[in-house]
Length: 64
Image (cartoon, rainbow, N blue to C red):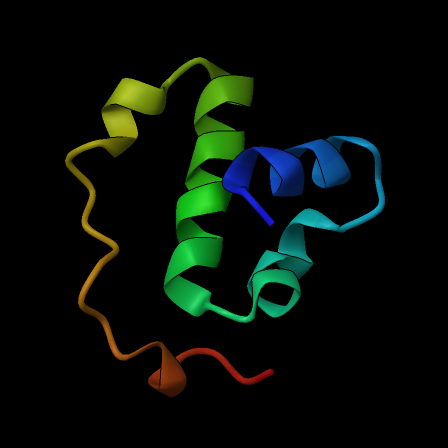
């Protein structure tokens, strides 16, 4: 499933935004998709560009 397809499912209320990581089975990709969602909805996507999210051990903060 592409990021665009996941975003479409979120907009269609098939996937809840807080369940993205579980839906794609990849915490880092889930964060990336949520950033796309929030950035476009709030009109501040460029502000998120400098906020790091890669390289973290998501197992320490995420429990499926």
